[in-house]
Image 1 (cartoon, helix red, strand yellow):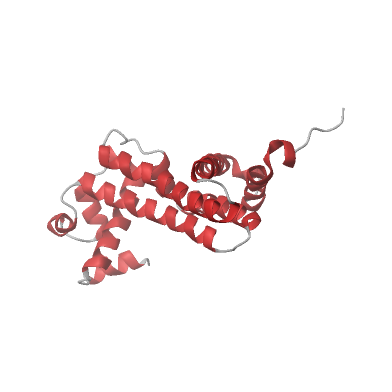
Image 2 (cartoon, rainbow, N blue to C red):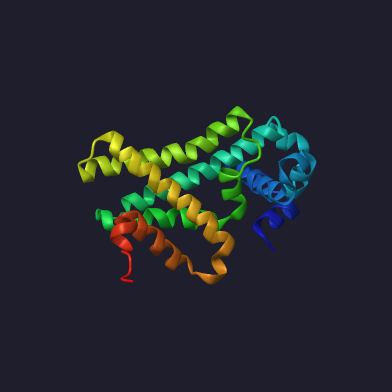
Length: 208
């Protein structure tokens, strides 16, 4: 029996932060199963085991709930990237750690990464802003590290950071769809090697 089910059965009165987390978990389940447009606040309240008035006390509408959930996923991704950067002072190790952060994010919860990278609500300004932050905050963190440790000016460091973020998230999403033939460790190593050494340095042409 899950924790959510136990809470539903007991009718436990939760502190506001715990109730909010419970509602977000229920919303994630409903959005993942039905998509945004088909998801209903009634169903989210039912899954969470609360009345609709309780749900509306925390989130005025479905879009507000969706954005709050999206923001939580963005925060998780940015935290993973920052933790990877802080995990070592060796830049050679920081690259695979950072690449691995994106692979872990996409494989940990498919619904989370799809909301961040494949949201069908990008026409909503608040949604687009949150989606953009997933990239910009990651780039900012990597840029700061490169500037401090590699002696590059900010423009060059930012360009490298954008490249690493783009490569990592696209490779991670591709791997998730085709990972049966390759382990997470091998995929991270290949991507990180490319990022660290470049195609020419890491994969020289073979003699004919």
